[in-house]
Amino acid sequence: MGWNEGLKLAMQSLLANKLRTVLTLLGVVIGVAAVIAVVTLVNGANAYVATKVNNYGADVMTVSKRPQFIADYNEYLRYQKRKNIDLDQYRYLQDNCHKCSGIGAQQATTGKIVFGKQSSTDTNIRGNTWQMPQLQNQTIVEGRSFTPADDDHASHVAIIGADVQENVLNGEDPIGKEIRVDGVPYTVIGLGEKQGKTLGQSQDNFVILPLNAYQKTYGTAKTVTIYAKAGPGATALEDLQDEIRVLMRAARHDRPGEEDTFTIETSDTFIGIWKSISGGFEAVAVAIAAISLVVGGIVIMNIMLVSVTERTREIGVRKALGARRRDILLQFLMESAAMALVGGLIGVAMGVLLAQIVTIFLGFPSSVALWSALAGMLVATSVGIFFGVYPARKAAMLDPIEALRAD
Image 1 (cartoon, rainbow, N blue to C red):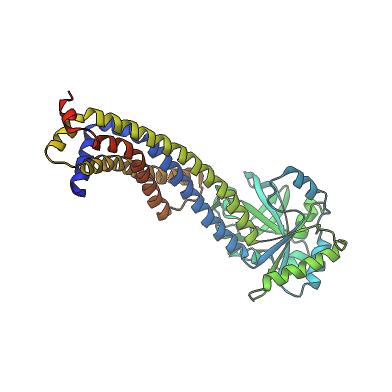
Image 2 (tube, helix red, strand yellow; image 1 turned 180 degrees about the vertical axis):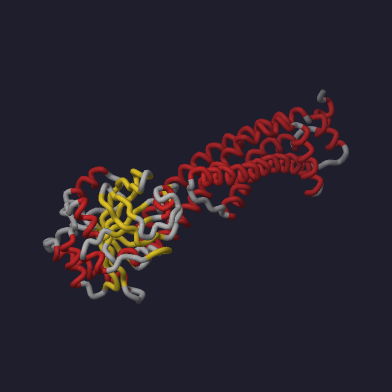
């Protein structure tokens, strides 16, 4: 029996029992859909985070009181005991860092923005030194950025994000408009380029103020995050890290042999942390898929055994007409594999559709990986073949005389 004939017989058998075939495929469909959906979402998130971090500056490092991502509560408490980083330490780096091609500082909080009768209460408010927009690749699409004079004189000027323009200023031209940031008036001098969402959270709901003006409203008690940009060169970032570490230890009076009382992070740090988190999601998805596929495979084997019993006379007739054992074996294996492959195709389509629904309604990025779709169909087909071997072998080993006597 040729492959074409075997596939034709397999599809005829599946179509003859549509409801049973659909119910049989549920386990395979769920397993493949779970993997495809998670892999699609994780791939999209990986690509998006990598793009955002690289746009943020692959040659930019941060100096902060504690890491931005802390998984352990005890570690969080330990980091909280560190002294704050203040503007004096920032100025010390600014004056003594020779490998810095740019350096800035930032503080942030959440507050209320008011313009006329419109307001928002969950806007990210940042206090930046004048170089920060360049260090963060913050493109100003209208107006201008800060100048050293704005920083030195604590000018009441602001740069706003696209969400603030659309939701608070009603889409009006923002330049020259006066907004109130937690009750304090500021004149809008710049509009930031629209950045979209990262992991479902808008990156455009912000107001940036000169850091000195920010501290006049919110005080100096909170820690400052310092941003430093390396110059050109393959080892420039590593050299800058070494210099910053020496300078910060001197500024903070860290004793020789003791650990740093500050944290230095680069874009590679953030990408590595995200990949470790996303890897956990993928592992859970694979575990769920494995269980679903095993259950689906057992169901396929059970249905194929029922099919062998129902078609005993058919098998006897085929053997009597000259079908060999391997022909019968191939027929039932192809039927089992075809059933699983159809389940895999449906699972891939459902997984991609589910990921797209999440993207549309929650803004979570997604990216379809061709290898994951092919792997899903390959694994599904392999499950069908593996669990179809026993029923197919049982059919092939039937005695033709006994099979013809079956009712």
